[in-house]
Image (cartoon, rainbow, N blue to C red; front, side, top):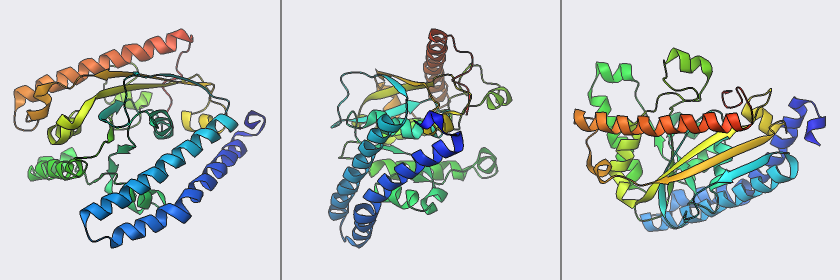
Length: 309
């Protein structure tokens, strides 16, 4: 049905249906839950409210899954490790091409892993509805300093590490899936060229944040869940193609990698030898992912469907 509508109208229809589902969970349940959480006097009571809010978020994801299958003519091809367990914690890494990636990951990981949390810029907490909901569900909000600022004041690097440590320590004792887009930003061909990436479909991986997360809670993770998302060929960007019913298929492939013992204790900032080894290992993972994306494209005889932002 949506394919028969002009793209802006089709996207508006999908967005409005998703907004109704969001408000259904937010107004009667999530916002009151956030207010209750603010008033709770102890960590234990706040954690109990957070569990309720996460259940609401999971229910919202299931509502979206119904909407996607009912409205959007997308062929989902999902290949994930069968041993995934929603009662165990995972560090999830994934390539990043579009804002649609977040919607896709919520859909793919629901009931397969714990409720996924993303590191978010601190400023996003003020985004209406979304920012407050993410705060209530304990998404980690980070204030990251630029490389230029760190070069002027090296102490800021330690501040970033301490912020990551506090965010991760908060999750000890309960299962969680922490999602890290190692690209750092959405992939485009222009960015690939500007950043001189050696990969065809990826930007260079940024390893520091991942190393800090492993330092803080790596022993809690059951493994490193390596996900690769590829969107089928379309004249539109993945987000608008997806919402407008013009995205023919989405392929998600996952691999559960072991977490090396050295990753739990290595000093990324202070140990140059460890930093080089860790970067080399992540570069090897990224090279495999780049080859996988190339094969996924070649299977469809597709030239650039995985490259649009």
